[in-house]
Length: 102
Image (cartoon, rainbow, N blue to C red; front, side):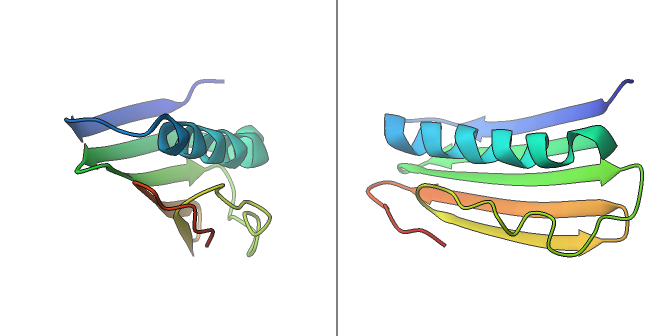
């Protein structure tokens, strides 16, 4: 099937490679976990002062089960998820030098 996609970004400056990889890996895990049900993805990416903030809103074809993303942990940074019937709202923040897991 097809998925509606929107990407908005505001990025400038330098970022640590480890932070970029952590955000990419976490995003990949999220998509792989719910791939079959995705109907739309809206991504807002903000990169500045050594930090990456990614806001993801994913529309799904069915109501999303509670705890579906509980097993996903970024290698660095913080991940928060909020379920809203058929939408998942995700906030992922990876900061420079931050090896802290959520």
